[in-house]
Image 1: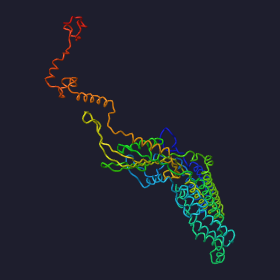
Image 2 (image 1 turned 60 degrees about the vertical axis):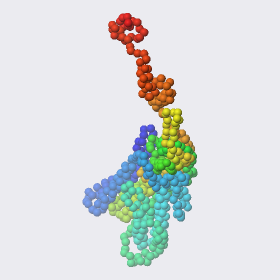
Image 3 (image 1 turned 90 degrees about the vertical axis):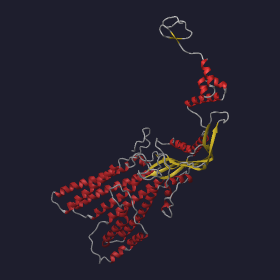
Image 4 (image 1 turned 30 degrees about the vertical axis):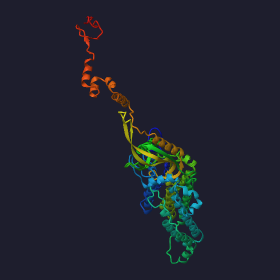
Length: 601
């Protein structure tokens, strides 16, 4: 599950990719716990007769089995929750904070990805693996690295198994079998098994290393298989006598188990590769526009347009931003912005259950690889029980010790090979790059007749002639194998409709920018009407002055003081009349008071 981004959609509630692996971890843990408890009860009965070295050894074995079971159970419990919070999955490059300009080498790589319209895949060189798996070049880097490791381990294991089979089953005898077994045990541990599982076996470390494959190792295995038994027979008299060791068969079985895990891993990777991209590219649209406004207005419009493309109300990831700068009366400017929408998980790309995983080709072999791990752990539990029985009842210990340890190594190797692939998540998003370049000149514009109009407007404008608008848009498929790990671009498809619509909208926005300053609010319109009236009166002479009140005309200098005083004196008085009896104000034409009926003078 994931962090709740919003209550409108559950598209980002990702299913736990390790739920199927957890099933096999539970199964392996149960097998070890059951074996540990059985051995523990056997030791309890044995210790009732007294404490001896064999009973103490069996007790240590029981503790190890219980510890291994609890370790696998704890690992499964630690993978029950799979939270993906805001900011995940990680961006393709470091993100630029809101309101700031900036870039990074990774952000420039994203820009070049759109410019070139092609996904970069590393040259495999002369690796012969690509002859048998040609589509591996288009696979994610994690898959390619795992294929290299598994192929190298597979060749080393195959050579080891063939050499051991020839030396032990064909050319050896009773005198040389024990020495050959010790030789192949040391060689297998140092060169093959130990490098493959180096690290903590029960922690979340999932590194699968390469076996130390080289030409010298292959030559050594061939010589040991053919000449080794002969040399040992010649010098057997000088060699110390060894007790009869039954480790050869167990060691051979362990190598076979590791080789089967390698084969299942390679089959899984072959399905994980998928076909090569059917369509690769990005859509690009170019427009030419002339505008009389500051180019920063275009940046504001680009921000609004990209905000409309947010997914699930989550802001885009911004990898590159360059705001236009205008210095001086003329010069050049550039506006650039690269953003990626929130990556959305692809539908049905992650199995929701065991049956769903078996129905998906890329996970079918992965289920079998995890099942092989669980089966090997069951055999380890059985081998540990056989070892405890040999300790308590008496018997050969070498076979059971070698079988338990060898199959444990093969099981851990199988688990680590599968775990890295279980964490795969495929996403899809849109990357947009807007690039605007042009040159500008500053100018001043005035509106109004200088001689006739009393009200004028003026504005400093920036004239941009024939600037170039370019928009790239592409839908990309990305993949990651760890929740907080990096993403890799696997495929990209051009979005011509998006590029054309954004470029056309930006061109229309630039051409429609107003040049004049004009009132827009209702208060501006009211004040403009008053200003227009005064402008008309001020330019109309004496007739216009007569239309103004005498005091206003005198204050504006349109009427002499004497004329204004005469105008005031001739103005009829508007003083009101009042009833002499009740004091109520009456109209000039009334003859009687409306309140008391008294006759008015």
